[in-house]
Length: 345
Image 1 (cartoon, rainbow, N blue to C red):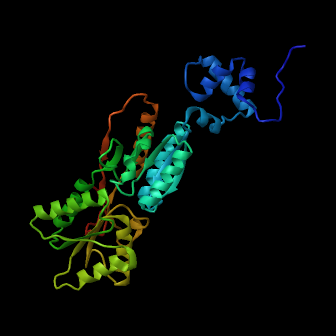
Image 2 (cartoon, rainbow, N blue to C red; image 1 turned 135 degrees about the vertical axis):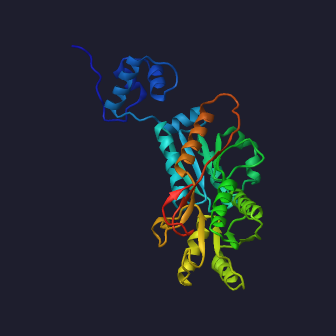
Image 3 (spheres, rainbow, N blue to C red; image 1 turned 60 degrees about the horizontal axis):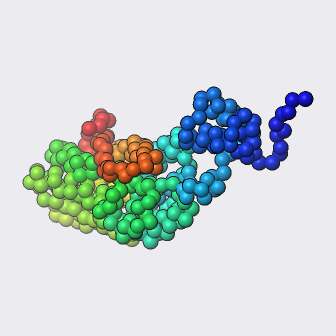
């Protein structure tokens, strides 16, 4: 009687897969890991055997052997609004396509929390890290143990080290937005934001100053503490001036959300009393009355590019050339700036 492989109720092993496929254990391991040559015919038999048996690779054992797991850490301040959600979706899309999993950790924008989360990921032999740094110049990015881990930052770069970064053209995009308000005839254009230590905010501030300076207009720029009504308080200080601003450029999503709430409570109508453009989409921005004109960052593309760049590092055996990639943002024109037809620039 011809021998047949008896399928047991226990967890199937790599040896079980190899036996059913009629190959050696090493061949089965190469086919299932995607590392090393295996003929198409043998690979097809191996994958069919693995599916029939319900075989799952032991990632814990694999990480002990390779000193690196098949999981990627995503380190972000919080899930935030549409921009961060799109970035994470883009990252996970690419990772899934390449059979990587992801572990998302939150830092609340705090350096000490960020360091704790990074150390947690290192202890669990993470395969790489994609991060929005809480501080681009944080000292923990200089420690030697991080240099052996593939790392890519997005939204904010890691400065003074050899780390890849996926960014948008913050300064250029902010200048275009403020130029648009100037084109509507506004001469008193205020600029408001929070977290002025962040690289992206500093670049947007520079773009605002560029546009105002080229037009010969005086800057009305304030960075405030978002706690305890700092954004609404600054709006009230501007409204109390003899010559208050006729337009406001918001530097980030949080500022825009709180300004919209402050406008509503004070019955300020856009753009009749104050024209408005915000950097970053907010959840209800397209549905407000009027809809918000916004500098829209390509979150999905940023996430996909960051993940792709990280996987290139992981697969490269040699030193890679560091890249800071800057993508275009779009000015989505709606009604809050004074325009009527929806369009983009």
